[in-house]
Image (cartoon, rainbow, N blue to C red; front, side):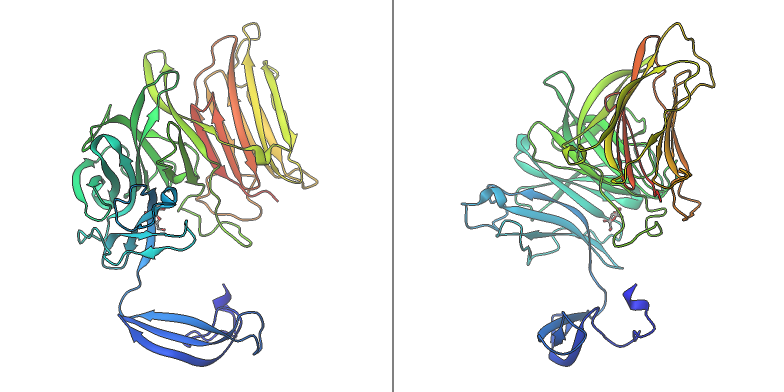
Length: 454
Ligand code: FRU
């Protein structure tokens, strides 16, 4: 980092970049020591003088951890006196984290989101816990309340809270130890999701666990059930994952998109996120995905209600649609290598059609290889499907540049439905310089993996 250079004092204050001279405005206010200073942000010499500003806290630093936002159209919070821009009455609820506590606090904007003011009455919830975070708030019209879910992380509980004004909250219930546990629960969500092909909606509770995913590190789970305004009850105790790739964590859904439920998820994994190859940034989000519920036979004996997904508005990558043709599966079928263009960003669809006459052999794979631009095509990202038994892999072991980390799993394997004779298995994917998102059979399954092609 810029703080590691041999010219950088480690104990003395220096500006991150630019030129500094005189200390200015030394003042102590409410637990903070303020140091202003003469500063030229643009050059490494005096001129163009500004005031720089640094603060040091007495005691512990408050970090701003995850949370959510709502539009407070009816000014339930009293933060807004001007009703003309009620559609932009955004209130944030987030976790303030210190070494000693995790508490929930608010901030609001009166200029449409340009600047935010922290509420003077913060925190609005402090239960004296160091493991209580990630509030997700939404309006619940039936009870005319704000409902908030937050993780009692290491108790493996999701707290459900209610409030009339976003400031004063009651805990209404807790969802306790459902699903896969791992080390802790983080980033819960609760939303009403439309059931495909009907007017019905069901409630879906989501949360993420880290570390301790069966795949290693971070993963996101969901539960379909009922919410009566105070309690959430899941249909059953089974664990279902939103995405079975390695890089899909802490997903959140927009709470106010009418009949649509759209979510965005962090495409990374705490196992290795701080270590992956990087130039000027680390981590990307998934594209927005639209969520629905679909009842499908997952094996001959059982119909399951699955959270299904589709990509929303991927038009930005539509200039190069590389691949969109049915693969007619036969016993000789073994790969259809495709070169990734220089841009390296595209969306594709592929269909594997299994016919009756060919017969299925256990060692036949339908394979798509996404090569990089290197001359020898030694690096590639691969997708393989074996219709005989429904096995699927997304392999990135040869897509890691020269970087190596044993936790950066080389291949994500999955079971998808075994295709019946004369049926089609559908793939819809986005390959985008480092993020591979794959939806299978109209979003019934999803695999998101990062990769690093030379
Ligand atoms: C999830 C998480 C949250 C926390 C935030 C801190 O990835 O650990 O629980 O609020 O990240 O950045």
